[in-house]
Image 1 (cartoon, one colour):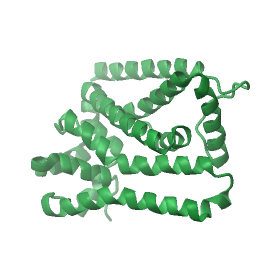
Image 2 (cartoon, rainbow, N blue to C red):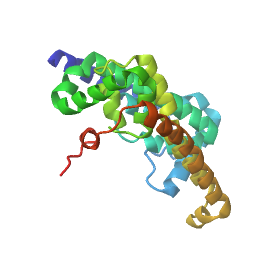
Image 3 (spheres, rainbow, N blue to C red):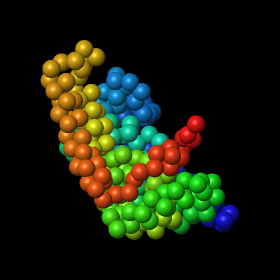
Image 4 (cartoon, rainbow, N blue to C red):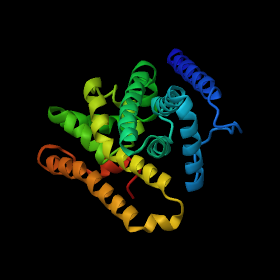
Length: 257
């Protein structure tokens, strides 16, 4: 068990060192300001503009850093990928950003799956025995339509995405089904984040958010994101076994009163 922990820590240290070395080579303009995640609209615009300037001269390096940072967060289940989705929309545009984030989400989640399978199975079972047991039961109940069940979990999560990524090897979920369920199931979420980043990068003030053009884009974005969830939910009522509110609360980390 401790050997597996040492292996995981070694992999984490190597990935951290690699990301630091890559980020240290990237400068954002003549001032060489340190890179950091944006916390408001103004910082988002400044960071996106600075990276655009750099990308014009060093497109490959800027893209490599973004991909490395995204995969780093996904692989080790570190929160904050949503901020990178927003940044992708501001930096690469709505459609290129969506394709990029959807691909990185799938690859990163699969790397998390593989790392958990190699190093983390015993830790997950030890620290989350009830959640693993309940989720295992749900997976077995829906084994005949497992792919659609996995899509449902991504669109209407009974458990956080990070926990599903970590526990999937324990549940004997095939890696191919896992990969494509992430690719398809998280596309609506990625779409909303990336489109939001693209919209925010184009407006100059908070008043512009309430313009008819921006509101129409947000409305169309919401409708488009709801379509896959509506279809899967309709299918789930006929084919999937999901009824058990108490179990859903436990999987979400909540205890019923």
